[in-house]
Image 1 (cartoon, rainbow, N blue to C red):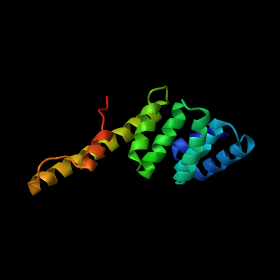
Image 2: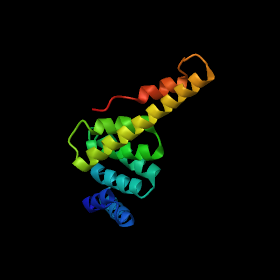
Image 3: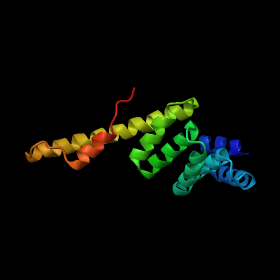
Image 4: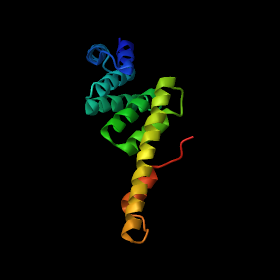
Length: 152
């Protein structure tokens, strides 16, 4: 039942049905971390990101090295705009074996967020040079640069 929910969530089809299936599975097996993750992922895809992240966090407490749960948390945090957490979870998810569609999406999100960071830094540098101020990095520049990393 939880796999039917995951498949629907991954395909972005019948999201409401995906959530209902995941809720029923969770009611039947409350303590199963895989079912918790399935419910969290369905909620994230249904736009209930905070509730979904909470379920995925509960799953990760029980299975801390699970790449799929880490991927779901990474996507959820990306949707919320929390780049630091998103990158951390997505990078951890890519260390293991993941389905190719999930690994591709994780890399795409990381690449997109890294490009956004670099664009912000470039714009900030252009503004500084246009104002004629010394090129001393601001706290935000240093903070943003710390999030950047090369993608291979």
